Length: 145
Length: 322
Ligand SMILES: Nc1nc2c(ncn2[C@@H]2O[C@H](COP(=O)(O)OP(=O)(O)OP(=O)(O)O)[C@@H](O)[C@H]2O)c(=O)[nH]1
Ligand SMILES: [Mg+2]
Image (cartoon, rainbow over all chains, first blue to last red; front, side, top):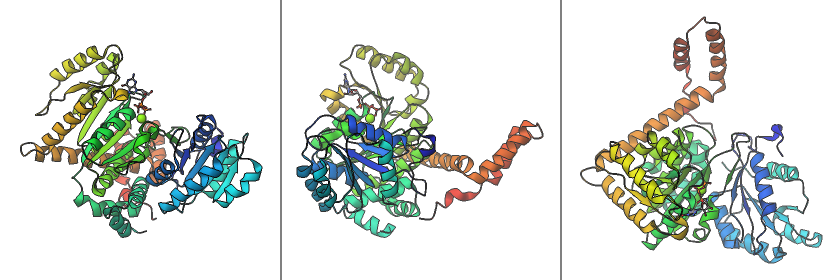
C-alpha cells in the first residue's frame, strides 16, 4: 500500500483520480471504509470521504457536486439489496452515467450477481487486499477531462 | 461538452455543468480557461468569504454553521473546501463534507472539495477560478475553507473579498507568531472553541495586536464563536456583511476592488512563474547545468538566475491540449 512505485494515482495526463467513498445505511462502523480511503490516498488519488449514515440522496448529490470518477460504497449492515438500487436510481435521476461503481464490506456471494447487475463493476469482500482495489480503480476509472 | 455548452448549462442553473466546469478549471484545461474567460464579466455578484486558519481549529464546523445562517437569511451558498495533498503520494483525503452533512441535501448549497495539489501559488490560481464559477452560477455567498499558515494561505486570501482568520483559545504562541503576515490578510478574526478556557485572553491579545497593526479604513473585529453549538455565528455573519458593505461602498469600493484584483493578478503571475521555473523539464535541465557551473564557481548565482529567467519558455500561456 505504500509501495513507492505506485505513488502516482494519476491517469495518463497526470491528474489524480477523484473517488467518493461513502457509507450508506445505519451501521456506524467505518473502519473498512477508512482503510480503503487511506489506501487510495496513498496510491495518489483524491478521496472525498463523507462519513457514515449517508442516504442514497446524499451519496448521489455528493457524487454530482464533487464530479468524482469513482464511487465506492462500504456496507456492513446487510441492507445492500435495499440501498444499492436506490443509490443507482438517485445517480440516474441526476444523469450521472459516467462513474465507476464499486462496493465493499459484507455482501454474500449469492448477492454478488445482483449487485453487479445494478452496474457495480467491482465487489470486494472482507479481507480484500487494498492493492486489488487500487488496481481495479486505476484500470477502470473513466477519464474526466 | 465544449466550453460553450458548459457555460450555457452553467448559466442556466445546471448543477452538473457547474461540477464539470470546476473539474476543468481545477485541471487547468483549455476548456477550463475558455470557461473562465467567458464568465468573468458576470462575476462579482456573490459575497466571497475565505475561512482560514491552522488545522483543526474548527473551520469546517464554522463554515457549516455560517452556511446554515446564510440559508436562514435566504441566501444560497457555494462552498469550496480545500485540504492539503500528501507530499508523498500527492493523494489526499478530502473530509470536510463530514462536518457539513446536513447541507448535502439542501438544493441551495453546493459544496466542492479540492486538494491543494501541493503547488505553491497554484492553489490560489485554481481556487480563484472555482470561486468565480460558484459566483456566476448565482450563489449569493461563496465560502472558501483553506488550511495552513504561510505563503499558500496568504495567496489564497486573494481569492476572497473577506478573509476570516480562525484561531483557538490557548493558541497564544500562534497568535504571537501570526502577527506579521496573517494580520494583514484577515479582515475578521475569530477565536473559535470559545467554550474552552482562555478564550477571553486570546480575544484580548488579538485586539491588542490589531490596535498596533496599521489598518486602513476597515478595523478588523475580533469575535468569539462556539461553532459546534452555533454560538456567535449570527454575529460573525453580521460582521461579514459589514465588511462586504465596506468593500462595496462608494467611498471604499473602487479601492477595495483594485486591492483585491491586484492581489489576484500578482498571485497568478507568481504561480505562473513558479510553474515555468520548477515544473517544466526543459527548465530543470537548464537549472541542472547552471547548478554545476555555479557550484564550480564558473558563474555567480545572480547571473545564473538571470540566464534562467531569460530562457523561460512561455509555456504557461498555453496549457496542455485537451
Ligand atoms: N470545543 C469545541 N470544539 C469544536 C468547536 N468547533 C469545532 N470543534 C471540534 O474541533 C474539531 C475539528 O473541527 P473541524 O471543523 O473539522 O476543524 P477544521 O479546522 O476544519 O479541521 P481541518 O480541516 O482538518 O484543518 C472537531 O472535533 C470539532 O467537533 C467548538 O466551538 N468548540
Ligand atoms: Mg476542515
